[in-house]
Length: 183
Image (cartoon, rainbow, N blue to C red; front, side, top):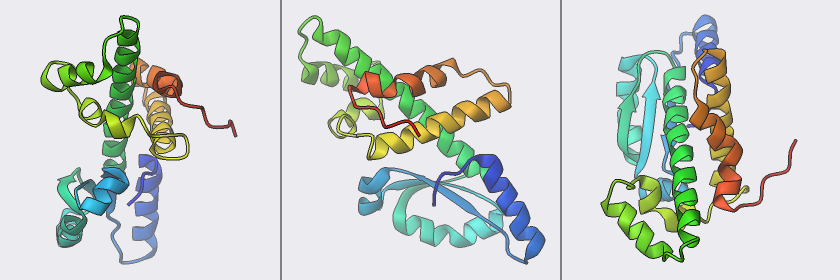
């Protein structure tokens, strides 16, 4: 259960089937270490439907939400990139909203309370206490990797995603975090 570029997962599935009697299924996850420990991961599956269905008890053991995205193994990876694209955009929005609120000395806790019961609500707003602690050494780095992968796949497929592009370049600044070293 990992995130790979969808096309790489599809190619892996093709090679596995070409060289064996095995059919590849893929399962990307969302929920992080907290979700894994609590058994509440969201699991995005793909591959031959009968094989995914046979593995369902294993997915149910570690997750509380299991989704099926079709026969191509890379589809679950694409779903994970879509989910993280939206997560990254939401993180930037909440961080920037809170930053703007500080200019008027608005209490952050009250703004978060407002978001949670109003149109500014999101998983990010409801979990800001933990999300705001993410660093370049933890989930923030994984998210940035997925945002970049989604951006590159968007370019490859001629899908304009300007918010994702902006989100991936501004994520660390919006969050007030130190950027990882360039490689």
